[in-house]
Length: 108
Image 1 (cartoon, rainbow, N blue to C red):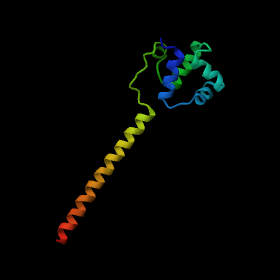
Image 2 (cartoon, one colour):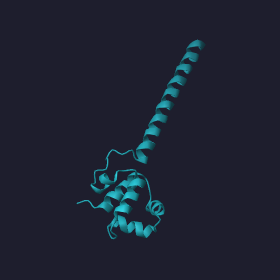
Image 3 (cartoon, rainbow, N blue to C red):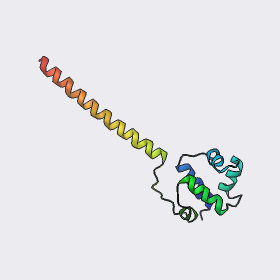
Image 4 (cartoon, rainbow, N blue to C red):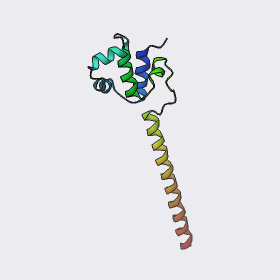
């Protein structure tokens, strides 16, 4: 059974956030935050609400572990950007190859 702490940890990691960042946002130490994720310290409703705000998920979804699994992670966003740049570069290469072919054909 998934615990609230493990759900929070998974969401934090999917957002590319560190425990230190979360702790700073919550105004607590990193050790205190780590205890929340590990289930050592109980999470109050107020604290869960703050965490859901930082992670940009509904509190109800966080509490019920129904957080969207297809969330745009930082890794996915970076991959999309790389794929877009690759496509642009491939188009440029194609254009350059066409120009080179045209120049070579004129020289014949």
